[in-house]
Length: 168
Image (cartoon, rainbow, N blue to C red; front, side):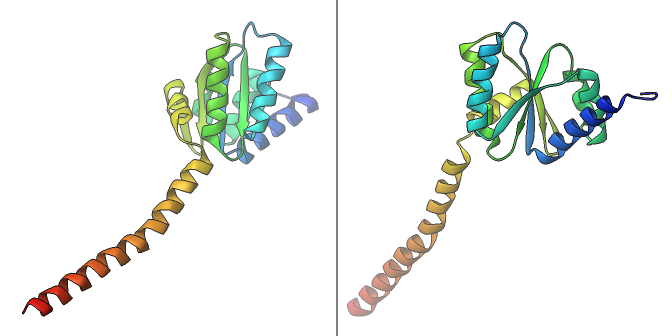
C-alpha cells in the first residue's frame, strides 16, 4: 500500500498480532447471517477459547503475508470472519462445525494452524478430534497403565518361575 492511512496500518498490525498469538485461525463465510446469529456464534466460540472477528480481506491478506501465512490469501475472498483460537483448537472447530450444521449460511472455508494451511476438510477433521481434556485424560490413563501392566507382567513371570522351581 502506498502511503496507507494510519488506521489501516494499525488494523493490519492488530490482525497480524492476532495471527501470531493464536494457535490456529479458522476462516468462515458468514453471508446472510443476522447480527444475533453472529453474536451467538461469537459467544459459543469465546467459551471454547476463540474469538470471531471480521476485517477487510485486503488488510487480512497483508497481515497473513506478514505472519508467514500468505497462502491463506486464496481463502480470504467474500465475506470472511476469522476465528482466532487460543488453546483447544478441536473444541473451537467443533463449535464452528455445529454452528454451520445448524445454520447452513455459515460456511467453513479453511484456516491456518501453526505454519500449515488448512482446507475446509482439515477443519472438519479437527472438529472430529476429542477435546484437549479428553486427550490428556487418555494420555494420563496410558501413563498409569504402563507401570501397572509392567508390574502385573513381572509378578506373573515371578509366579511362573517359582512354579517351575517347585515342580522341579
